[in-house]
Image (cartoon, rainbow, N blue to C red; front, top):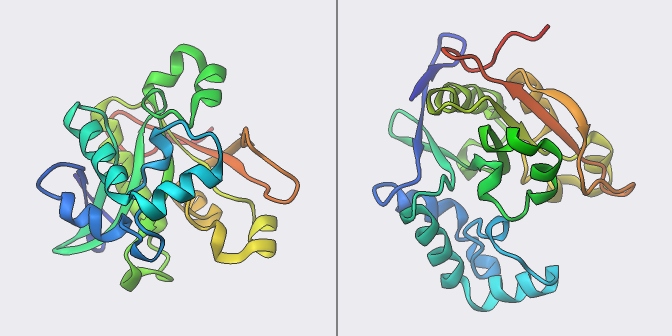
Amino acid sequence: VGLGSRGECMIRVERLSEKNFGDFEKLTSCAADGGCYCAFWHGKWSSVEEWKERERTRPLENRELIRQKMNFGFHVGVLAYRDDSLLAWISVGPLTEYYWTWKRVAKLGEEAGSVAGITCITIAPEFRSQKLQGDILRALGVYGAGLGWKAIEGYPFETSAYERHGKTVAWPGKVDGFSAAGYTRVDSHWLNHPEWERAIYRAELGGAGSVAPRA
C-alpha cells in the first residue's frame, strides 16, 4: 500500500512476513541491550526488571515470539518503505491481539477488535529528525482502512514528559507526528503518571482514504 506524501514521494507499507523479517530485525534487534524485537507488548511480565533481564540475556526468545505470532496469523506490525529505502517499523495491530492493551480493550468493549493500536514506532537511524512520522502514519491509515480497521490509536508521551525525559520517551511516536497525520487527542493514557504524562491519540479511518474528516 502506498501513499503520496503531499503529492511527493510514495511511502509503501508492508505487513511483517518472512519476506521482510530481516528488515524487521535490523530495526528491532537493539543489540546494545541484547535484543527487544518489540516483543514486550506480547507477553505478561512480572516486572520491568524481568523484561530487561530477558532482553539482555535471552534476546532470541523475543525474536522467536514475534516470528511465532506472525506465523499464527497475528497482525504483529508493518514496515514502511520509500522506494527501496527502509524507513520504519511500526508495531501495530488490533488491540485484542496485544496483551499490553487489555485495559484499553476492556474500556472499548466490542469495538476493540476493529481498532488498531500503535505500541512502538522505530524510524531507521538515517531518516530520523526528518519529520516523516506524519507521512508514515497517513500511509498506515490507507493500509488499515483496506484491512477494515475502523480506527487507529497511538499512545505518545505528552510534551511535558519530553521536557523531563527527552528522547527516552520517543519510542511510541511523537505528539506532533500524530497531529500532522490527523489524529486527535481523545483521552489520557491508562498508565498516565504525573512524571510521565501520556495520551491516547486516535484517527477514525475512512473506507477509501487514510483518515476520515474530523467534525
